[in-house]
Amino acid sequence: MEIIEKVKDEGLQAIQNCTDSKELNQLKVTYLGKKGPVQALMAQMKDLSNEEKPKFGAEVNQLKQLLANAIDEKAKALEEMEMVKKLESEKIDITLPPIETKLGTLHPLTVVQQEIEDLFIGMGYQVAEGPEVEIDEYNFTRANTPEGHPARDMQDTFYIDPTTLLRTQTTAIQMRVLDTAKGKLPIKVICPGKVYRRDDDDATHSHQFTQMEGLVVGENITLADLKGTLQFMADAMFGEGRLLRFRPSYFPFTEPSVEVDVSCHVCQGKGCNVCKQTGWIEVLGAGMVHPNVLEMAGFDSKKCSGFAFGAGIERIAMLKYGIDDIRNFYTNDVRFLKNFNRFD
Ligand code: FA5
Ligand code: MG
Image (cartoon, rainbow, N blue to C red):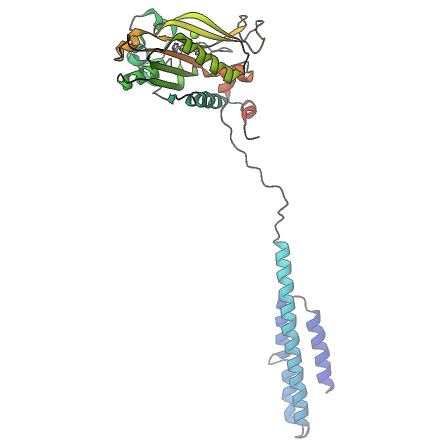
């Protein structure tokens, strides 16, 4: 009986002190296994008298049951504890700030191009595009500038072969639009795209730049329509009140022709390097579509008329954002491009 008490006290103590389930399994083997004290007590039964046997047997069984229960309970408690520990260690702190995802930005030229497109789409225009590697015919001949015409020298051209070139003006798209219209009126398009010229790069010139051509052909289209349209575009792009100057000019494909200047944003018209001391920056060429152009594309120039313009998108972006060098658009300095991040 003494031994039973001793095994009971020691066993319960050990189980209580146990701190992990592996150790507990070991205890189970130690106390309740074949070589354990409980089993040893059972083995002693045969040495007892018949009167002692039942009482002793019941005590040992009780001890066995007691230890087994204590182990079960402890196992449950340990399991719970270990689960809590695990949950604790895998806890996610949802208050931590997220890893920042950096969004790209639209290039300022794309922003301006899309703004102009939206403006004209709102007035019922369609957007037309064309190839950058263009045939001479659409870039020059159809634009009333046949081979040998002195106006070809106005745009120093990258030729690929004698009849293929990098287009020098989005006017080439205009000629394609007139061609595919097959005499059907009215036409209202804007034509954005890259153009190429052998110009020397400086603050306002690049050998590759972007133009936005506009073309409207219909009945009774007049110079007043052109002027109103350009004023509308300038007000929308630069805010009302920016000075516009219409200057008589010459293009083979328009008659009459104008060039439109906007007052310089750097010197406010006083004269500086950017405007070459003139106070003005030329943003576009325009005019009434030359009758020869309409006739070559199959339109009756007595029954319809049209206006066209070709704007430099870089120049508009420079005026709009106060950029003083066109080369900024092409050097891809992220510090420059970041200024146009519309998501910040
Ligand atoms: C033309 O290209 C004519 N096709 C425009 C036109 C279209 C006139 C339809 C009439 C009817 P011009 O060469 O001036 O014209 O160029 C038009 C605009 O492109 C200029 O006003 C200027 O804003 C821009 N531009 C011209 N050359 C460069 C250059 N090297 N770098 C940046 N922008 C330029
Ligand atoms: Mg010009």
